[in-house]
Image: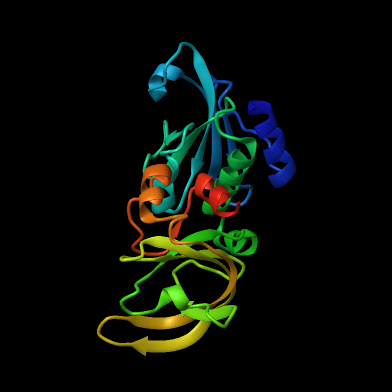
Length: 246
C-alpha cells in the first residue's frame, strides 16, 4: 500500500517523495512546491511505539487535519491514530496495512494537501466538504423546514461554501439528523439579531434526502461514530458519511 500511496500522490499532485534523513532513509516527505510545507510523511514505525499489538514495524502516513472536531472523531476509527512524531493536535497517523480503505486514505491526503497549501492554492483547490449543522427547535421548527419546499435559507456556518453538503441535526428533544442538503449559495446578506440569535449572513440549502428521527439519533452518533456533541458546524467521519449516503 505504501507504493500505491506514492503513485497516487505523484499522479494526483505531481509530487515525488523527498528523503531528507540519511539515518532513516526509507522515511519520505511530500512537500508543496510553493511553500515547501509538508503535507504527508510516510514512515515505517515499530508497532509497539504506536500502542499496537504484534511484532515488527508497520508503514504509516502522517497527515494534517485542520478541523479539530473532525480530527477528534476520526482518530476513534480503526487504523487512525493521533499524529506520531508530529503535533498530535493537528496531525493524524494512518496505518498503511489495509486497515483503512485506500479511498479514505486518499481523501485524507487531499485534506492534508489543502490544509498545508498556500492561501491562493487553498481557495482554488478546496474540495466540497460535508458538515453536521445543528438547529434548535426552540427557535425554529426544523422538523417541518422543508414542508412544501425543496429549498430554504439557513444561518451560514463558518467555513461552509457553495457545493458543500449539510446534514441538518435537530437538537433536543428531537436529537437526530433529519435532512441532507446541498449548499447552493452562500454569503446572502441578512443582518438579523435578537437576544438569542445573530445571523450576519445566510446560505441556501436544497433538500436531497430525509431521515426518520430514529435512523441517526444522537445515541447512534455517539456510540457508533464517536460524536459526543453537536454545538456548531462540524465535519463528519468517513464511516458516518458512508452510512448517511446509503
